[in-house]
Length: 105
Image 1 (cartoon, rainbow, N blue to C red):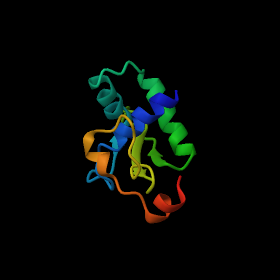
Image 2: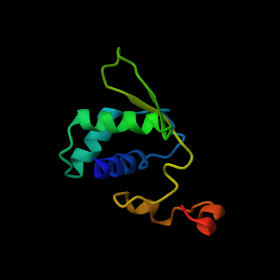
Image 3: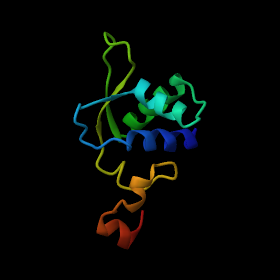
């Protein structure tokens, strides 16, 4: 599942954060992965989203009345800074904070 985690992060980071609509739902993320030829189930995508939320990387909102699954409401400041192997080309020039470049990680 680590590879799926990276692909989900790349799909989340396709958006500009803070997001103008203040949300991206799990169905949208799943559809992006599917569009790119990923065979992951929507349930597997949701599981990764919950893991990212548990680690504080994203903030999820659950709105059962909408029926669209969990919604990514906010993204932690570090999540989209570092380039991800499956990220679109726009992230190739992502700039890491100076202390990360100097001290690593």
